[in-house]
Picture 1 (cartoon, rainbow, N blue to C red):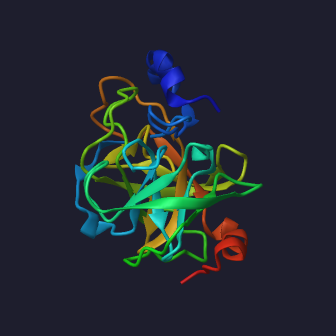
Picture 2: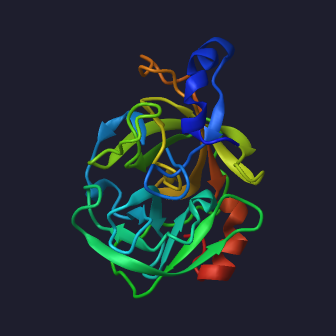
Length: 250
């Protein structure tokens, strides 16, 4: 998969031929590229207290991906965000690169089969954790996504406030590494660069980790329902997640 920013030049063609799909890449500043939410709405960390900012420096001020805290010592994000420069995670804040608590990443564990990366924190962070879904969500199920990503295709500027959007489960697909994904149809908004690794929440549980998303035309369309996202499936990767982190379905 090519990174969304590289493919932005073909957005006009995408509008004519149907939405293309690109890796939800880390935002500029990281070594990789990631997706923000176009449309949707701003929210606060209280709506998703487990939402995490994945930073490509030691101080939590070079955020390029989104993640989710699943226990006091573990954060889950996308494997395509993995990099030697991924050094810290900022937790417990609404605002990009400000507030909350910054934790050093002690170790990174990448799945061999899907777009899933587990980050072990150097010291525990006690707060609110998201439960892991043990089953694949039903087609048509309403869901939410969260992230600090771009608000227009190729903008390269992440949102200062945490954002959210409604999506609908459309079925099973594949993530950027060919692993099983939960495919969603965008509704009130659409994921973009910087949202990579962010949570897909179905029935209050983490059902997926953002991997790829359709490229949007510029300016943003009036409706996002032609556009799709693929989220690495938590339930299909659950045995590996549990074997590494000790965290199971809840």
